Each structure stands twice: as C-alpha cells, then as structure tokens.
Length: 262
Image (cartoon, rainbow, N blue to C red):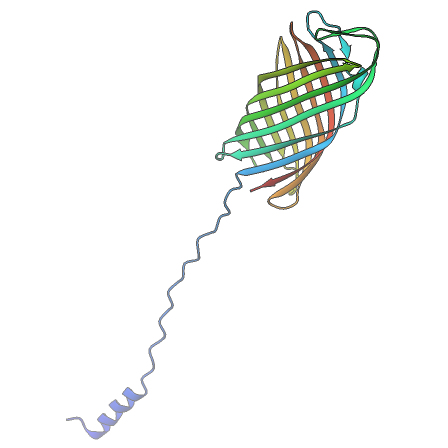
C-alpha cells in the first residue's frame, strides 16, 4: 500500500494533467477550377453604304448590247447589309452561314439603242434595277492559332439569286439567274492589343467562265468577353461570260458591324 504522501502526489498529477493538444484540422482541398464553357456560337450583323465601281451588262452574252448599268442607276451610294451565324463544332472545325444581299436601282439615260434580253430599248430615259443576293454555307478549319494570330481556311458553297431589269415606258425586260458556285475561304485575325484585332476575310474563286470575290479588311474592338464592334472596308467583284449572259460588277463598301458570342 502506497504511503499517504505518494497517494497525494498521484492525485495532484491526475488533476493538473495538461490537456491534449487540439487535433490538426484536416486540410480542405480547394474546389476544382471552374472553367467557363467555350463560346461556340457567334452572330454578326453588318451594314454600311456601298458604291459601284463597275457594272457592265450584255444579255444575251452572244447577241445583246453591252452597256454600263451605271448609266441607269448611277454609282451610289446605296445601303448594304449582311447577317452571319458561326458555329464552332470543336477546337478545329466550324461552320458559317451568311446572307448577303446587294441591291441597286435608279433612273438614267441609255446613250444608244440597247438590245437587252430580247427587247429593243431606244436611246433615252430608262429605269434599271440590279439585285445580287447570296446565301453561303462555309466549312472552316483552324490551321494555326497562337497568342496573336488565328488562321482559318476552307470551302464555301454559294447560292446566288440575281436579277437585272430594264424598264422604259411600257417596255420591260428582266433576266433572272439562280445558281450554285463553290468558293475557297480564308480568314486571318491578328490580335495586336488586348482588345483590338485586325481581321482579313476572303471568299472567292475564278474560272474561264467567270469569277467571284468578296474581301474585307476590318478593325474590331472587344467591348467585353462576348460582344465586339468593327469598322472597315469590303469589296465585292465578279461576273460571268457565256452565251446567256455577260455581266461583271465591282462594289466597294464602308461597313460597321456588331458581333455577339455565346
């Protein structure tokens, strides 16, 4: 049996025993990084004034009278607009659907007798209407991307719905043209500043029977991570030379656009 002094020391030790240290809290893993979903869709509307630099017509191509349609419509300006929808299928492949109408009209003077689409028009005042509307579906492949540069190239299918009409008194003649044209496309983007991008966009092709070209150079500014505005110059040139029609036109436009990504 322990002496009283030893029992007192043991009891005091049990009472004054230092408390056990608090357990180290478990490390809480940081939440996984939340990545924003990629913005696969982009819509853009563009508008501005357009001027005619050339619009030569001969219908039919092997027997009509060649004349400048600007004699009737003048050289402009007229309003022009287009709408574009883009869809990135993945990081490399994408589709673009575009509607681009061009319309000019006016009243002018025929300087000589004109045989147009089977109708003989006399020299004098006449009215002209020109329409060249296109629907385009493009496949594009992103073949280069860096911090500053992005390049895409691919193929475009263009469906044209065009007409040329001349009216003079009770006489009128109109040539309609509906057809399909395959084109090549190329787009280059240079992000030279944090919010600023220079954009080159081209669609075109050429053959012995004719050619088509749509080229723009624009400067874009990112308002935020979804929307941007751009301003620039667009030129549209081309035509056809065959037994049915001879028509070559060239238009230049100053354009502004607004784009939204989602």
